[in-house]
Image 1 (cartoon, rainbow, N blue to C red):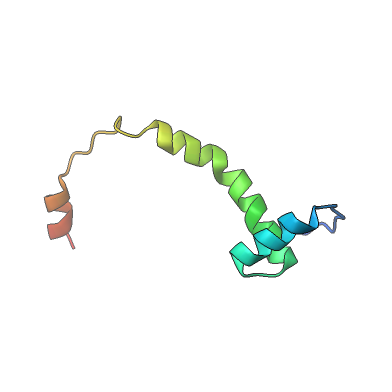
Image 2 (cartoon, one colour):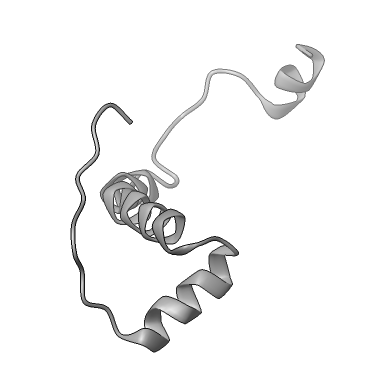
Amino acid sequence: MKTARKITVQLPRELLEKAQKASGSGVTQTIREGLQLVAASRTYAQLRSLRGKVKFSRTVAELKTDR
């Protein structure tokens, strides 16, 4: 992270507690992880839309022998 902004956010207490419990982290890290997930959600949707449409030139067996 190059620069940081200090912000004040009002959140429902229950939501923050649930998010912290799920992440196992403090407030700052929980908020960062949540924002990263929101930022990545469009990419995830684009990847899901490609399901079954991408043709690979190598088989799974070929990939395994490449190790």
